[in-house]
Length: 250
Length: 244
Ligand SMILES: Nc1ncnc2c1ncn2[C@@H]1O[C@H](COP(=O)(O)OP(=O)(O)OP(=O)(O)O)[C@@H](O)[C@H]1O
Ligand SMILES: [Mg+2]
Image 1 (cartoon, chains in turn blue, red):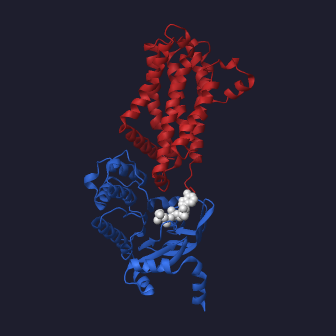
Image 2 (cartoon, helix red, strand yellow; image 1 turned 90 degrees about the vertical axis):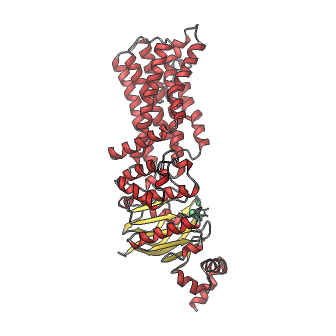
Image 3 (cartoon, protein in one colour; image 1 turned 45 degrees about the vertical axis):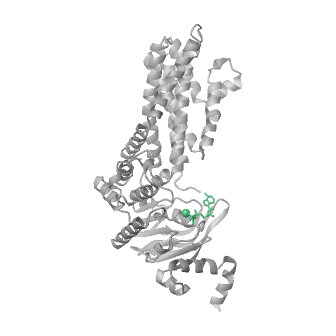
């Protein structure tokens, strides 16, 4: 699978005593913008952690850019934004960026570039602890953009942002995808999902749907993304899955 | 491991500390104030000269232990550690960054404590003040190294707070502060031989009384350094890129 940025096969993850991902198989083509959707607790963060190689107790295949997830070589090719902002509160944004860029040998010009991309140039010298919620999550995103990684794994990067800012960020994601970067972006906001090339819908650790936004609307016959999401989540409760699969097979 | 990344991490920790003047004050001044208080309490007795050297080992050690373990625990909990572990930086670089930054502070802290004790509080030192300084500094760095290691076993601030009684108090009781080590029961003496703080206290006492040669002091210093290196290596081994 040369042109798959992410390839998983029968990916299972155990967290604590429970299995939270139950054999997930999918491919993310290189240069695509893929949305990862699903109710709270469905396993989005866990899946992303497995992809960036920080999750323990993973079985099955997880290949990223042609290497096993977590390989040392991937550390400068994959950018990861955790669900909670992971920047130092007692440093300024620029000090944070300088520190992380030293690991990637990204240089000062790159720091200015990512500040610009996330619209944080004005706040660059402000302490992270004093930022607003939206500025904080953008600061965390800015770090992940350093060094222009080939794959960006973003866990709910647009939470708490106003509509204008959200639109700007999705425009940025689109530009990045057009320049060849692959993006996997999780979200709760369905109308954002329609901006993706493909959607992965996760429920209870299993993939419910893996298709284009248009395909999803068509299949569910729903008028908009929100309705399609509800249709899939609600109308196929877990205990009925067997029957549905049975019908499909017959 | 790379020197460039270790120094980048060191610089980052120092910048963080620089933004927090209260921590700096706590680190640099508190041990000296406590020693001064002790000197005052025992003003008209010979006690300060008996326990002074041990206290010079104890206070900087304890404060470096607490501050280091708290800071690294905070890093673990805010997700910045997880982010670094997905980036091209070695685990040893991250740990050494802390060790060097806090080690630098430990040098100043121990220096101030030695200076205050000898020239202000009148602690009588028969041996060389340089030996006193070298061992006090190593001892404070030891507090940092053990704090780094301890924080690997804690998930909450509450657990870190428990490490004080668990890690530090036994070393304090067995290190010869209350009773010279050679007067303790054999079993306790044997145990105390395996606790690093005992050797720091031994060495500082020896310098104060000038009753041992340089080879003895050097041996004690090397034992302390071995514990420092061991704690740092163990700390980076217990740091895992993958977590549950
Ligand atoms: N450290 C852990 N130990 C045990 N179980 C965990 C741990 N972290 C998460 N889980 C469980 O794993 C499941 C999936 O969690 P995950 O964080 O991946 O969900 P999510 O889809 O990202 O949810 P949200 O949208 O709320 O962020 C949940 O049931 C959660 O309770
Ligand atoms: Mg999540």
